[in-house]
Length: 337
Image (tube, rainbow, N blue to C red; front, side, top):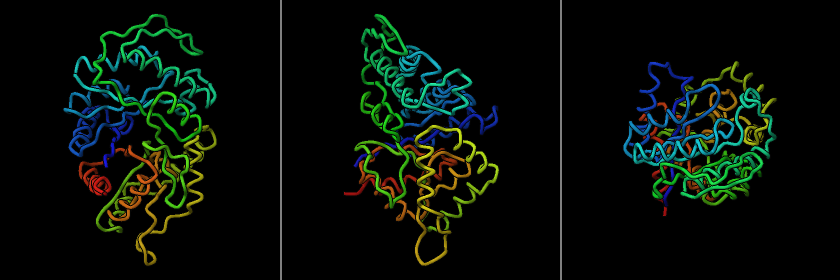
């Protein structure tokens, strides 16, 4: 069974400026050595431009594909297509695309964009269709709601073997419909293991963190040390919940409420439920974590694979060693017959 794995790039806001380029290059090399297909590069109003970060990824590695987050509000679809083809021209490498419809609400408002949730997905569909048409070498004419182009062609042309993989959030009905319309991989946030996910698309993906060790207690010790309880973070999380119209944000919050508190490691006879929303609730990251022994986390990942998941977008790795532990889990799942 073939699984496609993406890591995630450190954010500039979390690393001093004089160390950031080195941190990006180092994480990219860890990811490549671990066998990842690519590395997600975030975008928002408060971090370094993802296209410039992607260039650093390309120069530091031999095959790893930057998975660039593309926000339609930031640039014309021609400009995004030109970025992909120019990086391919300069480096002979593919750049994958993570198409966005939303973002932090205050970021969008600051840019003068108050488009409603489902309309943002419709805009992203229109945007992506123009972008991909240009990358395929077509002459594109489109009289769209958000973009109008006439006899537009891209130069330099993109070699067909360097066409990007395209991902998009598929947590909401609008996101799932957009993924189907543009042929993108829908990425969702996995539900707790005891909750069904009937809307999971076969061949789709999940965004999840993994902390696994041979011994469950050690895995939980590492997890709680990396993501300690943080009252300020909990307040920030509550504020974000009040202002966000993001389907995935509220979906995760509901999942956490339904799942209840995680049993602390070492209490009771059995290993705790590996599904953990502690980092999400403390505003430390934006995905669930699977924590525990290799066997238990492997079973959890296999559960999502059995639902049709084939793409895993991991959280930012703190070290090469942590990626190796994650690789142990994923290689066991991938080796199942």
